[in-house]
Image 1 (cartoon, rainbow, N blue to C red):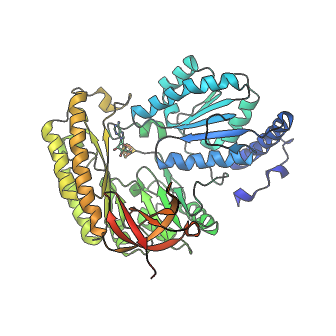
Image 2 (tube, helix red, strand yellow):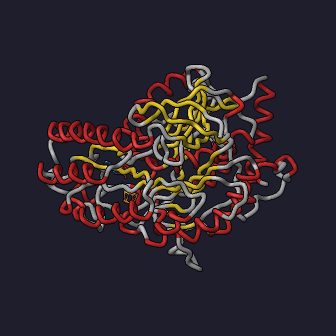
Image 3 (tube, rainbow, N blue to C red):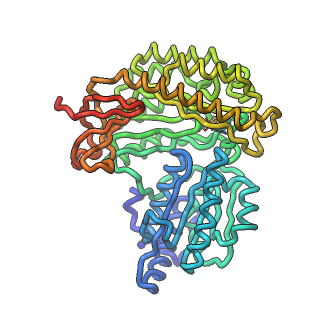
Amino acid sequence: MFNELDFSKIDTWKEAPSDDTKRQYYYIAKCQEEMRQRAEKRGTAFTYCLTTFGCQMNEKQSEVIAGIMDEIGCVRRESEDADIVIYNTCTVRENANLKVYGRLGHLNNLKKQNPDMKIILFGCMMQEEHVVARIQKDYRFVDLVFGTHNIFKYAELFYQMLSSETQIIDIWEGTDKIVEALPTERNYDFKSGVNIMFGCNNFCSYCIVPYVRGRERSREPQAIVDEVKALVADGVTEVMLLGQNVNSYGKTLETPVSFAKLLEMVEQVEGLRRIRFMTSHPKDLSDELIEYMARSKKVCHHLHLPMQSGSSRILKDMNRRYDKERYLELVQKIRKAIPDISLTTDIIVGFPGETEEDFLETLDVVDKANFDTAFTFIYSKRSGTPAARMENQVPEDVVKERFQRLLALVQEKGKIASSRFEGTVQEVLVETESKDKGIFTGRTQYNLLVHFPGSKELLGKYVNVRLETCKGFYYLGKMVEM
Ligand code: 5AD
Ligand code: SF4
């Protein structure tokens, strides 16, 4: 397996191979040599701090960066007082950008104290021209900038950075490449995300993702299954299949495969116990998928189905290609087929032109759909998207007031929905020990968190827990023998 490759055996005197994966192995070997020499010279290993903003796909891609950094002999640490500071950025909403700019000033001060320090920025935010222009102009101390399409080239870029005195910027417009089998350092031993596709073709009018992540590309099903098998062999029992719109998985493959079919293939992997996936677009959610979820033994009964707005008029302007009625019908259909399903959603408040009436439609859907949780966002204007050019941007005070009303309803309804499990015994995967020693946190198949007294050996195991007290979006419980 790639994590067990001995990179020191690679002949770095030869020319770099042209095959993408082999080429990166070659550069990992070169970085390894270089970093070893530098560390010997100064007498201590180099440290790195990697921070990820944004979604689970970013988390997953950061694991590859961490895998490569570990492989080249750098030691991870939590504090930014490290030799190499890396940000995997997000730009889905403005505040993610502001956070990065805010922290760069602090990094500049740290760099003045540590001449060895390198600063690396990559990911979605870097795909925006105005961001790169600003970094070139105002943040000259940043050493390396790359985007979303060439993350696989990290080792090569890192090597280039080591021998460069000036800022390196490498942004690609797009790509059809999917480079497999790079080293990965997983955040958890027992669960893992698995990318099944990249990019998005939906162009929801508020969303910047299609511009920064490019066109939709699916991985070959066999590559996905092989990755899941390797993960399971390494102790993983729960996978989360990741994509911006998993329901359109496989449509562009040479031999098209549906998402339901992919789930069936992944389910065959022996030793795997739970399958999750994210995100589903309501317009593409097929009957085949609902049926499969209903009969599958491993697919968790949790569906994240972003509705964005309850107003058909706003949904049209958002280019979502469904309306309020269709969304509610879909919810009904899912609940009929999978009565215990946990439904979660994303909602945007204050999309341009949203009136009080439109907003009441959103509240109406929240009232009727009985979501377990809803992630609520204030509309953020993203330059280059059609919505940014729309007139009637809603005044900030109106949006904030609506947001508070929505949040109150979401919490009230969420608590009612979650309390349906009160008193039941659920199988949970034990994930972490909380700050209160002896209290552990597990997750039910419904994605509901439960805190209960336990012990360290339980981490990564499945145990039965009685859900005793509902605290809204989590429970307090007690383990039971079954
Ligand atoms: N403003 C606010 N929220 C947004 N999202 C995407 N783009 C924007 C934006 N411009 C939200 C959507 C999406 C989630 C990941 O982020 O609700 O489902
Ligand atoms: Fe953005 Fe819409 Fe694509 Fe989701 S489906 S990433 S909201 S464009």
